[in-house]
Image 1 (cartoon, one colour):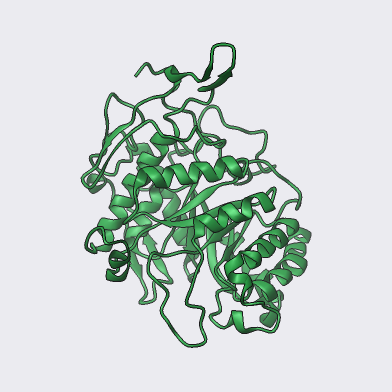
Image 2: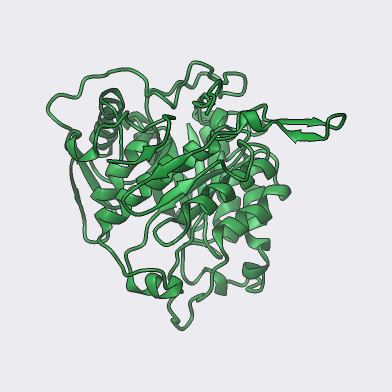
Length: 415
């Protein structure tokens, strides 16, 4: 199973920064994040996510009202770690898709193939005011646009063939321009012309994650490699429905409805509009913590998802025994093992695994207090149960998650 941790300030508990064990200055130097990631990596945790949002944190007494940029923080952690996956949250609603994909690709290069991103949206007036680019829009519209951003990002990552860099000093050519390709992408809200300014990332496509907290986010999760699902009483049904929906969506064609790439190239879904795709019934509680997924009446198992498991799968660095037939699904849950102990958490993990999850995404209340307990007590217990692999295993993040390296859809293309 996969184990992930979330890094957010001094921890998910708003009071975590006031503990005697915490140097509050270390939040803004990145030292807390580096230490947490290194502890997690040494223990065998597979990935860390970095929380972020466009809105300025509220100025609430006794709470930390500042936050480092998640992508920048991931870049700070990358050279200080060697094996753990790094997924910053990136809000795409008010940011330029071209720069988003270039930033994620850069993180993949500097981390040696350990990068991903948690694609997120923003509907608040505060975020719109911070950026000053446009007015807030409904959540469904933001997620629809986010799917376009995910789509064009993958196309731009493919716009450089893997062997485009030739470094031929004799002829003075560093790049073979014949192996660069144009991506003329047009969506209802933006357009992008390629190729990218960053060579194809080591993983081909860095891991795209979606945190499911609304029905619209669930719809967008069809395009994700990794899904962060809130815990609920019917998590087993949610997972089965999510995978069935994504497989059927992939088999029937996935598209975000009108995104075009001049001259061909990969189209998510081959042109079928999301609006005409199968329906997904979902409900969420008021806090957005639980999402109920109801599959369509016919949800046959139609095999592996194209794109996630391409013909040229990189099996060399896969986790032994791991075989994915859909998105990697992690239950995301807040934990305080330094207070609650690990027995209950181990039991919960076993239940989630029995329900069919691929792993857990833990949001520790305190990085300084809870991560050591997770590293020194929880992971060894899970390892004794045969639920997690060896701590020192490396390879790419896609390989660690059991995902293949996507084929470059422009390979051999003349345009």
